[in-house]
Image 1 (tube, rainbow, N blue to C red):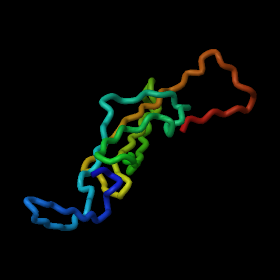
Image 2 (image 1 turned 60 degrees about the vertical axis):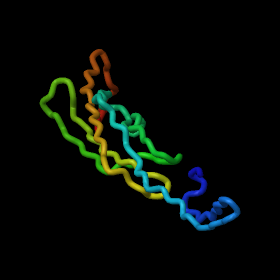
Image 3 (image 1 turned 180 degrees about the vertical axis):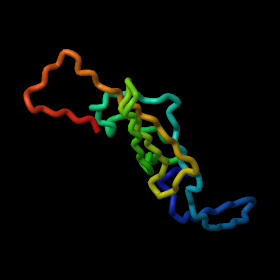
Length: 130
């Protein structure tokens, strides 16, 4: 039986010494997917597009499971000389049939403060890190 049979009702027959017995079985997926967390923090430029940063991995017994963003938090570091802030992204695993994993995973993305040493901007130019 493969994941192609999930949700189907199958009929089977067992025959032994000329005696047969038939029954039906409904195939279900009861194994929840799991999110596989990073073990390190991520450090990027404050100008980076955090949507392009790799998401956590997911494991499931059937193909098609994915991670889903469930929380996004920004913390500002106005006085830190190296970072302007941190973004926390919390993920969970969900499979194609809507079964949700029991655990979540949070990754930390530190946004490096840019120095722009040696760069002369055009007049009236404003650069925003967000």
